[in-house]
Amino acid sequence: MTAAQTLSPWVPRSACTPRCTADPVPTVDATLQRHRWRRLTGALAGAGVAALRAPLAGTRGRRRLVVCAAARLLTAAGVRVEVHASPVAWPRTGPAPLVVANHVSWLDGLALLTVVPGVPVAKREIGDWPVVGRLLRRTGVVLVERGRLRALPGTVAEVADLLRAGTPVTVHPEGTTSCGVELGRFRPAFFQAAVDAAAPVCPVAVRYRVDGGAASAVAAYLGGEPLPRTLARIVAARGLVVEVHLLPALDPAGADRRELAALAEYAVAEVTEARPPVVTAHPRRPRVPAPVRVRRPVTGHRAARAA
Image (cartoon, rainbow, N blue to C red; front, side):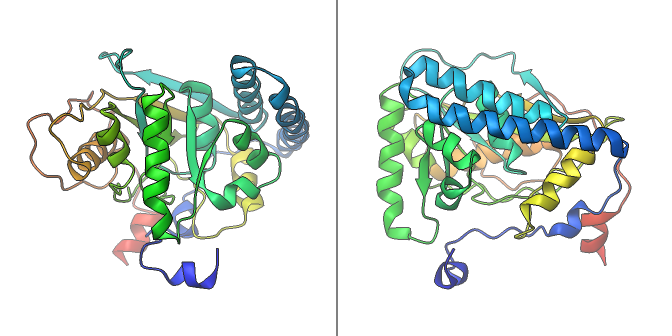
């Protein structure tokens, strides 16, 4: 990102910093950590091979290669994906859904690839990452230049065309990562694609927990923190689980993009137990299962905010 983009008021900024990850978490011993690093190296090599083979495969074959590579990366790092499906099924007819999820870590994208078929939306810098960036490009990823506001309408139109064509699209409307204790505002821009395509909006809540069931920010990728440092925390964590909650779909009929963004944010916040959102009253406010409340010590992020 250029200096001009960094100073742009349009570029989303997270209120979270690496201090949010200061809470202690249970860890595995050094022997298992070394084993995970070796497996992760092998999984990265396998993902590179999958990215090279993907252009030679058909649509289904390419999808299978990408999903398998993402699953191997998660398993190698000691991460388990746990899916919580809504009792209300997502629509199966009409335009494809716009899937919107909160954003905590680069692991989010890998987990969602294994659960929700479709094309992800990601910042352009990720497309330049070795292996993972190449793998994402094989999915047909829509790359966003966050500092170029003029390019946004064209990107939104591209997403709307994909939805009309029956291809689900996954987007993180916060535009940046948060620690999971805080939830960034869902920016409404990409919800316009759902309005234009008359496509359902399907919220997904992503939540991380560690051994013992406590919610954790250990996987969070925040504030320009070096990627290897985040990865080291993930590899060391014991019993790291990424929960993927598939929430009831929102009907775009009669709603504008701001209402849809507020409703999706509310639904996700209810499950992740992030800060209470402020939303506009709306007759179609979604009902979501009551989350299991976990008492957490006031440390790390909350302690820093209280100081």
